[in-house]
Every structure is written in structure tokens, then in C-alpha cells.
Image 1 (cartoon, rainbow, N blue to C red):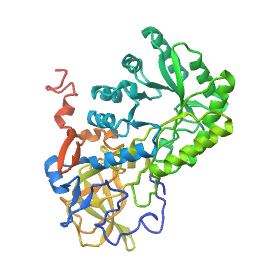
Image 2: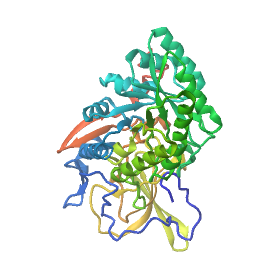
Image 3: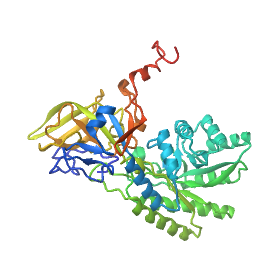
Image 4: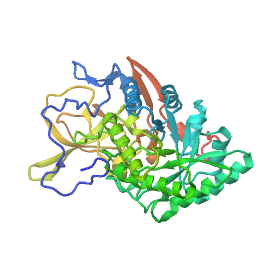
Length: 470
């Protein structure tokens, strides 16, 4: 079952077929955990030189912990493997001013897809010339700020947006660098909600039927638009290059059609992001050292086939850089044994977080792993389900996992691969404050986002006497 979209069918055992009962519930699968995560001799989980018990004492639960060493190690691996490519960190995975400064220090570019993300990047002092702006419905305010600040490229998603950017460029008396987003009809092997290149969805211009070519010609003939190239993104949590091969073939065919029509070549191709990480032991995502030569070979082969020059290439990893660096920590509040009939049972472990801080399992059935973090246990593992505190039966954080049979109230549950699309998709459902995010390195903690408080939420309530509008 694929991590991004597996919904469990009725089977003989309540555990999914991919989940193996571990001989040692204290063991850590290294492909799931950040680079500095270990177990101390005491059995306590340690991240960045700090024990989980100390982390919880200092920052509370729930909380996200980013392993700085892991972040930088992955940055360097992606830079090394994709040498010669322009790498845009996908800010939607997780972005703060501090993260933006890390990306800047690493020499990467930054992809933003909302006014909020753009505002954070600019507040961090990030060079606008290294920012790419995405979004299928950019507001005029968002576009004005991007044009005024001089962002490096705006990825156009509709004919309405082409006209809007052209009008603003005329108003400001500038020429705006743009790309068009092309949808290639490729359905990535992922959940419908995170597959983004099939035809029947909201993003981009379809290569089938000639719509994308019309959009390219529209930009090419505009005196206020500088056409840089084409953007093609096929989805998220993708493990191999098969989908990229088909998408590249169809996109480069578009390059050839443009060349035949104008006598000029498009110079840049962005293959987007969507590179997967391991959330469970069953997941086998390709590493950057495998992806880079495979993608290069695909582009070279397809370019030669169409008789065009190999374009300049860029990619947009987000999850692949920050995802595995993050660990979510929760405290157990209740434990409930549920009889499933016969000899089968499941332990429901309720924690102090839930779908408000990680919506992915409820939204599209994403799978996660978990371990007992504050101690080791010699008790045999039991099939468990880690659930949240919200008033929803679908409030599940880890659908299926084997945890020690003595997991109890006050214990700390650690969930790996929580650095991407957890805090960035968090909400205040049930009026629940969002957790903090801290980074750890060499035994030191730095707060990236402080814990949200009830007072923070009440300030938005205009009926509250202490609200900002009073």
C-alpha cells in the first residue's frame, strides 16, 4: 500500500499486510528517523544531543522537533546530486523566517505559493530574485508585491493570470519574468488529492489540445512578459522517475512545437517537486543520488529525440529536505483496549495532539510510524492505533503500529518524518492551539515557532474584551 493514499480493506488480520510485528519494539528503523536520532543506554530517545524527556520538560507536548544536522545533511546531498540544476526549496512543506534564512545560507532558491509564504520570505530578507511564485489563483495584491519586489519568476496558471500580470507589468513599466505551468496528463501513483498533472484538475495549462502552446505563444508575443520556460509538476510523495519520464516527453514535445512555431527555443524546464520520503518501514523512496542521473538521462534522451537543446533544469524539493528532519512528540492521556472479535484486539492510545496538528492521515489516509520515546520497554509489542483528542472518529495520527504492551498514561510517543506538511497544514479545530516548532543541534534548542495559546485565539474573537479590535 502506498503511504500517501492507502485505505485499509477488510483482511483476515486487523494489521495491514505491510506492517510486520517487530521482534524489538524499541528498535529504530534508520530510514525513518533523522540523522542524530538515537536511543540512549537508558532507552530514552535522543535528538540533536537532547533526550526526549528534557525536550518535553522544556517545550511541552505536542511539539515538533527539527534536527538541524539532518536538514543540512539533506541539503548538501541534494546540492551535490543535482549540481548544475537550480534547486528551489518548496516553502509549502514548512516555512518560517529562520528556515528561509537556512535556505538562503545554503544557496538554494525558494518556491512560495501564497501571499503569506511570500511575506515570510521577504521578512526573512530572502533575495526576491531567487523566489519563484506559484499558485492557481494569485491575488492582485500578491502579484503587485511580487512585481514590486522583483521576484525571479512568476509561474502562470491561467489565461486570466496572464492578462493580470501583463496589465500590472504595464502599470509598473517593467518586464516580468514568467513561466507557464503545463499539465501533462500524467497521473502520479499517489492519492488523488496530491496528484497534480492529470488533466481533470485545477492546475496549469493542458499539453493535450494545444492549450499550453497557446499560453506560451501568448506570453512570447507580450512585450511585458519575459518567457523563461515551462513548469511541470506531477504530484507529491513520488518514489521513482517513471512518471517524470512520461511528463518530460510530453513537455519537451511542447518545447519542440514552440520552436517550430517561433524559430526560438525555450531555455528552462522545471520538473517540480514531489519527491517522497519514508514514513513507514515499507516505503522505498529513491534518494537524490539515484534520482539525479535518472532524471538527467531522461531529459537528454527526450531532447535528442526532438532535436532540441537540453534546457536549463530546476527542481523543487521540500518534503525531501525537511520531512525526515522533523519528529512530532505527544504525551499519552488514555489507553483503551478494543476487542475485535476472536483472539484479535487493538490498543487505542490517545495523545494530546491530533488532526489539528497533522491532518494528512484524515485527509488522504497517509501512514506514519511511531515509537515509545521516553523509555525502553521489555514488554511484547501490541497492535496499536495512535489517535488524537478531537471530536472526530477519523482523528487518527498513526493508524497501525506495534507499540510496547505497557505503553501508558504519561508516556511520550514520537512520530518520525513529521517535518513537512504537519505544522504547515495545522489548524485550530476544536479551538486547539497549534504546537511549537523547535530546532535542536549539539544539545541546544532554538524556537522557530512558539506554542500558540488560547489567548492568541481569543484576540481574534471580536466579542472578547481583550481582542485586537477592542
